[in-house]
Length: 170
Ligand code: HEC
Image (cartoon, rainbow, N blue to C red):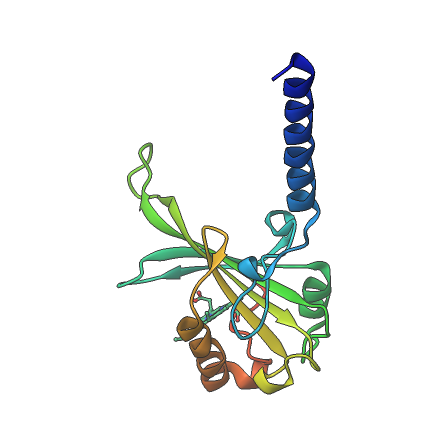
């Protein structure tokens, strides 16, 4: 093999690699990252969204939680608007908790457990009260069986509040 051959092979390999990298970066959220049943994905930028309210979940889960909403959801909360308009998105972050190493009585977040998402689209999700659901662990959706439980529990308890538990914290 001549040096020219080797250079050509290296160039071809580099081009293939860079094409693969580009297509991976440009690919919109694929079905891999979308929840079963609903096709909901983790929304971009949700860590910067406004807080709706925190929650403390007792045994056996023992979790700290925070629900945040996009601007459409926050506006609806502030107006007291029910049902939530299409485009509203709510995200619930959850962590195990642990005693603060610096202050005995404080419980602080430990490892993250799940990120859960509700997306309002009254047409697309008409069969589930207008909300699509997604539960994610390490950015990956959990199985279909878990997604079959979402609507039932929300419908049983908070149907009259458009299936949403969390109130805007005072
Ligand atoms: C057994 C009941 C139950 C089931 C099943 C359930 N949830 Fe919830 N969900 C709650 C409760 C209670 C809250 C209120 C916040 C809290 O205590 O964590 C909540 C809150 C939420 C919120 C924040 C908005 C709100 O309603 O307060 C999202 C998003 C959410 N759940 C998504 C999901 C998804 C996705 C699934 C299915 C994978 C699911 N939930 C299954 C009980 C349930």
